Image 1 (cartoon, one colour):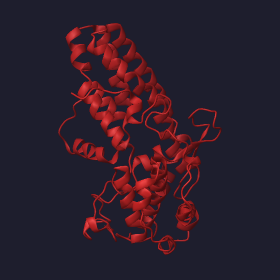
Image 2 (cartoon, rainbow, N blue to C red):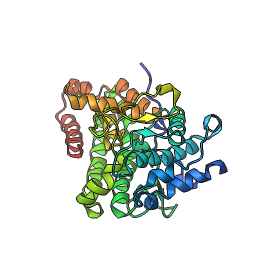
Image 3 (tube, rainbow, N blue to C red):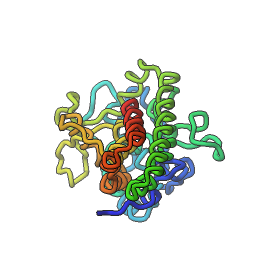
Image 4 (cartoon, rainbow, N blue to C red):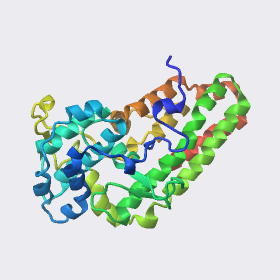
Length: 342
């Protein structure tokens, strides 16, 4: 069995959870990408013209093989944010959907996806985990001190929707930090340690649910549905794209349409980690198959964390074995918090 490492080995921290450990606003890209960055940052202006594809086709034709071989992870991820936002804008940015991506977007996005280990489409990590910055560097990752870096249209509703998720991910770091200690306590049948760990997790889940309850404050449901949600649709099981999306210039795809899932909060690693820790087995239904399919859309290090937690946790079995009513109640409290979040 693979031993669970310290959470830092999985690019996870108590302070930031699964969020990028670097300050994305301070990551600098080589000068060769100045036109790419400028185009991505101009999306809020270009989209409203109704002819965003006209502008995106003017991107320089770049081969990123050299960049992907030498760039830092932070640089690769920052560039992936820009390209995946432009990719989504190209497909969904005009009245009629376009199912053929030009090479100037398709090939760089594919090359970056090979480097980052995720599919060549906008993922939750591009949309949320790597797409924020603090306003005051010395402050916390809280809703009154974070900002969105790369938008589609821009505006309060879009920013608030993403930043709610950023704030949740930050609080989740406290939960993730409890997991190695809780698993160790479980292995030693340390009932006090188990109870303490479970209570901490339940308390932090209450914080998370309180943040989620704030979503309607600045993200109006109408604006979400009509101005935020359309940009994050995927290509699979989507009636607007019955043949998927062709990635021009990507030889590996052999000119075949690709069917990829769209960005969704279900790609966050928080809930799957809790399922792994609590050993929650879901019914074999289409929703479970869909959630299982999303695993590959997560960063590789986060996938490994979920898998290692699952391999090492015997929390549920030990609580049944110990037959302690207080432990059962503490475990069930965590279940209830998770159910409320779902």
